[in-house]
Length: 56
Image (cartoon, rainbow, N blue to C red; front, side, top):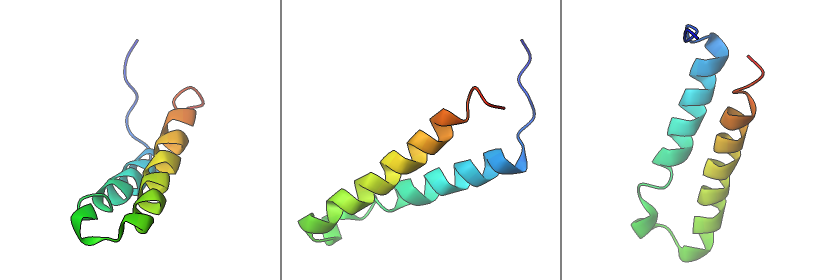
């Protein structure tokens, strides 16, 4: 099995996940009530990426 070259969709998913994770880097300066939304964004980005693994 040979890995496939990344597609534009792969890069978009990678960027979305990186952006979502970046939102968790400054949690020390965000009210606790806002943490859930930041982690929910990461969860959604991970789900999107994982759901595409077998479809490409």
